[in-house]
Image (cartoon, rainbow, N blue to C red; front, side, top):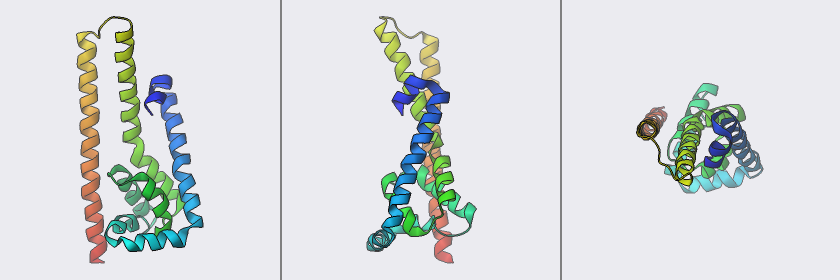
Length: 170
């Protein structure tokens, strides 16, 4: 993602990354469909960890979208969720839409940090330094991006816990 940000910038870099991510999320979903029963048995071995994944397969379209987006934002391993989501009966449309919505912040942060690294590398290779204004703007921009990503992740973890608590009550 950094290289796409450095090479193609925000617009094209975002399009390339989101296209690649959607393919990367769709393939395991489709492959996982062939191994539905095996994945389901695997999830039964770890019921506590699987409870978060099962949240995604319950409810209507919006509930599935929301649960998938929150799982993508949280520090839950992507590769596990890509395959395990099939066993939860989540539909493809809320899966891919929630996945894309849940990874936008990460994509933008990666592109931004790639552009930041590129500007630092360009200044260093030219034997010059960034101006004070550039350092301040880059520092503020990176801090805002990192803090917002951390805040979104904390919110997602709390929202997932709330969804799980609501599910246990039902």
